[in-house]
Length: 322
Image (cartoon, rainbow, N blue to C red; front, side, top):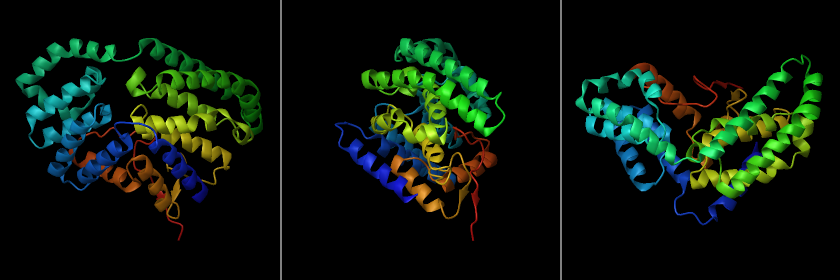
């Protein structure tokens, strides 16, 4: 894993030289520290750090408003909970999603809930006005095209036939889609949560492209040319580091014949990998394996919901190699 680690360090050096007013790797590092505090039930300290971080950055991520809303409610900070709820709506939190958070049902006992319901449509329209609707439609269309083609590959039942389909049928069309993504990144920035309202579409396109086959990945030039720009997008706040990590992990896993576990999302981690995996995560500002697993325990204990996706729903297991 040491070669992979060096590659990321060098890439981050490229990013850190960019002329950015706000460093969102630092933002995510601060949020990760808040999550660590939540995981050891130091809720007051965590909420203080959420306050400070939100006040220091122009574009907090939706997942963080979701968690902070629940922590504020847990501590009886009702006015602050409604403030974060409203800011979450202005960042794309839908009423349908809010209603799925059972812990937030307590907010319905307050008069402020009725105001939020009354203002919801207007707040949601304000959110939609911040997105590039044309690019959102295009990314969704590209994602659907990609998903249909991936589905066709499921009808090939041997690894050789799957590779032939992926290399000969899927790859040429995937290259067209990825070139378009590169054009969008160059012209508008990364098409994720902030630009088009969803990280799902870019994540799907790039993850599928990176998992075509080892032979294809070894000669692919598209993702390696895009990767530094994705890292720059992580630093500028255009891209979630969690989605970058899974996209990058597929590339490294396939190219290395699954000899590198990297960020710990796709393949099972071993205890030998854990320290370097956590270091790679730290460089991106994302939570360690231990912090994530502690948050799962807090979810079960309190009923709160911490939006710990993508990919894994439960704890990330670590196999003991001793």
